[in-house]
Amino acid sequence: MGLTVTLWPFRCQRCAYELAATPDVALCPECGATVAESRPETRPGIPWQRGPSLGSWCRTLVDVLVRPRTTYASLRIDRRALRPLLVGNLALAWLCAILPACISGVFGQHNVRIEFPTGGAFWSATILYDGLPSTLVFVSSLLIPLLVVVTFAAARWYAPRRSPPTAPDVVVANAAVASFAVVVSMAAPACLWLARYLFTPSTPMIGGSDVIVLWWNIAMAGPILAFLVGMVWTAILDTLGGRINRFANPFNEGSAPHGQFSSHDPQGT
Image: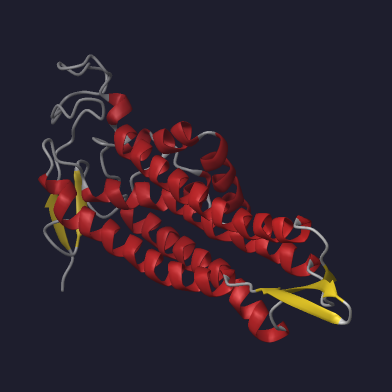
């Protein structure tokens, strides 16, 4: 299917007032914002957009962590450049999620065996099984494809039908920033699990109190809590980006005139 150019009106990024043929030195008649600040080319872009590399990826991650508002405000709405970043981050998140299962499969599970003396020569044993690796694989295998489907469905059908409409490129660009939170949401539980895995003794532990069981429950709850906090943070980031960039204008250097965006379909997804 050939590449088509779909018109998207140049609007004020604060109030969505159409500013076609309005000079940059003028002000928006609706909200008083300068026309120049709504030009998509005036946005510097996130560090990754200014030069893709491992270092710029890490700087972008730090920016998302410590100053998300500034990150979204500087984000250049360039769907073609940010879509690979979105897909790459989600793939990295899935790899982080399956890492515990891979380690357990290669080196074996580190379940805790606690033995309790019950009198005489009799002992009772309690085995605390490590179910987190399989849980992370199951959850990530459902969640990450769902995020992809929701993102591109929102860009194709929901965003253009809002009133006032949002450019489909904005949905993909915001999701690319929020995908850094998805990476952290999967990497943090994996790192906490790895720490617990490395410090779990291979020999049976003699239990005379509930301290060992309590330690194990905390060690198991830590990764789960980290995942839940990460997912909440992802939702907050996506909502924040939706508010800041609701009326942002798409940027497609060299593929379409100003105020337009290129796409393979009428919705620009």
